[in-house]
Every structure is written in structure tokens, then in C-alpha cells.
Length: 78
Image (cartoon, rainbow, N blue to C red; front, side, top):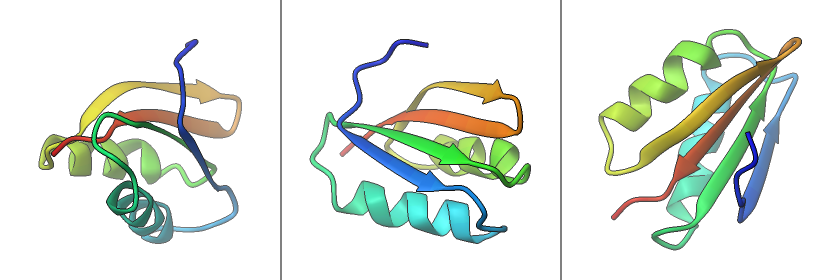
């Protein structure tokens, strides 16, 4: 996916729940309309991050599996 990205968050090597917590922290410090790219190695992130975004004002623009890497693109909402 070729997506313009404002902030890249690498949480590789962190286990659940840290990828999700770091994602929440990153989004809280961003401006509305910016895009966050999250790169995680924990398989739990594949389920947890989209579930969090679905319950938040943010938008999941896309997600990809790149080998053992899970990549998410999140648009910061209000």
C-alpha cells in the first residue's frame, strides 16, 4: 500500500498489550487528519489494533502482512 504517512511507529519485538498501548499514545500526540503507520511483530496486533480503531474516532485506512511484520495505516480522527 502506498499511503502518505506523517508518523511511523515501530513496535517490533514488543508483546501484547504494548503495541496497542504505544499506538494509542502515538495517536494522542498527533494532529487530526494525520496518518500513523504502525509496524508490529506481535500477531495479536493483527486483531487488537483494528478492534481498537473500530471503537475510536480514528479510521483504519489499511493493513498488510509483510512476512512476519504486521503494518497498519491509521487516520487520526477527532
